[in-house]
Length: 161
Picture (cartoon, rainbow, N blue to C red):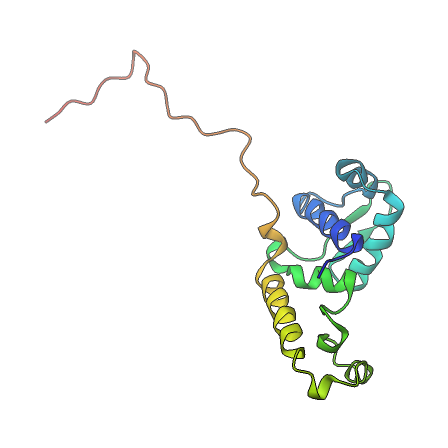
């Protein structure tokens, strides 16, 4: 099973928004440059992410996009489902419970291979459910490391009692 460029580019977009979390809206032009991705394609992807409630937009000179929730609250499964649709290695093992999927294959009721596709789907879904965007966003580190206080000649040494 493979994900399309929608999934790949959308995850990269979300990681950039995760890196920018808490700093206000991020420009798609900046993200496109940073990730070497086509801006028009990002504009399409961000609409799906917005419709899924994962990002919010702000208009104006300092507008752009930002995460709707903290990175640790956004599951990778939610991102990929918003971009790719239901996770399914085969149509007969789709997460989508729509009636037309049950009839997509006339062998589903007696198929001995369906169990394989369902287990693959569940393994992929389980991995994506268990990861959040925060797992892919590096932790911010302080720009200034605290330094131990330096001893000066005027600082007396403690005396032992």
